[in-house]
Image (cartoon, rainbow, N blue to C red; front, side):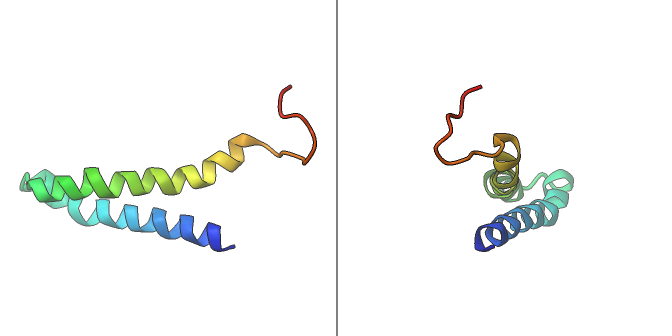
Length: 69
């Protein structure tokens, strides 16, 4: 439960950082806004999303069974 909450918070913080600064990055061309979007926001979105996608695409693994097909 704690790991899922952490992934949701990570994804939420990344989306918030991108949403807050993307407008000024596009309109004003602010380098600090682009830095926040590209260096902080997008990696947090990717990390939060990957936290959900890896278990979904990895499939179920039973203990003691080989993982190859």
